[in-house]
Length: 88
Image (tube, rainbow, N blue to C red; front, top):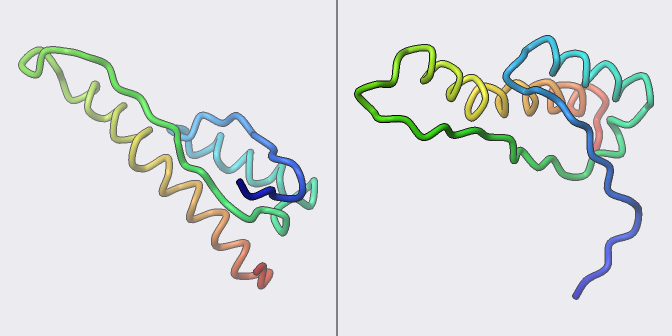
């Protein structure tokens, strides 16, 4: 097995919320942690088991907000800052 130097840090965030993602990115910037990010694991996701014919738009909107848009939001915000700061 390979060993990786350093520590793994986790930051809880409700990625279905644009303001929560923005707050997380601001927190990471204040702590000067953006340049230390070497990998982003987008493993947030939800699934509620419901009968397809009983599901409504609100159900699907919640699924989409978390499982798709949440990952896009977080990746976009962090990548934008990394590119601006020429983080390798």
